[in-house]
Length: 247
Image (cartoon, rainbow, N blue to C red; front, side, top):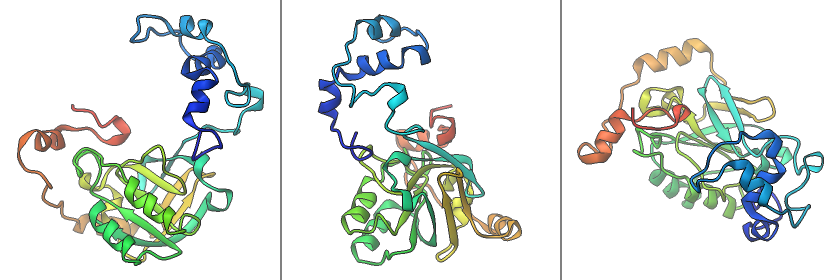
């Protein structure tokens, strides 16, 4: 589906919808009960695949790998997520200089002011489950970057999350998040960042001694919300790599 392919969601619906996808994947999924009261195999067996180009046989899959990839490295010890099917081949490996923002709002102002340039890796932190709080969606910054024609020369990394419409080298769900003192918290402007999607790596090109030094000097910022349910949520929510659920 767009933006990772040529088809729209209605094309999937016309081709048989999710039951038809389940039929195609029947031998690779568990026969669990669903909210409908039916089991997965019941739904799959009753489905019909109406378009083999939209819901392709496994031997004619659109891609050799799945739509998303998990990257790890010294910037994401707990992992980061990228929608690799929406990244062009020439951006599967990218090195650039960090331009760092502590919120989506400040990032948006700078992007729209033209301060984000070719070769930048936009860093948006303190937007994770605890920092957001609630793991805000970074659709606006990614859409602005794409709309300004920079998706082939600018990457974006964040402890927030992304919309299904995001395209380009945008990595989210970075864990541990900045508010938990993850390495994302100690990045500075012009730090060199390497994104290697095929190699499943996300790293800042600093020696470990410098990373450790910065982490020791880091001070946790005050929460954005300090009362009510969201404050309670921020205190007890787990990291994104653990599901961002209340403990």
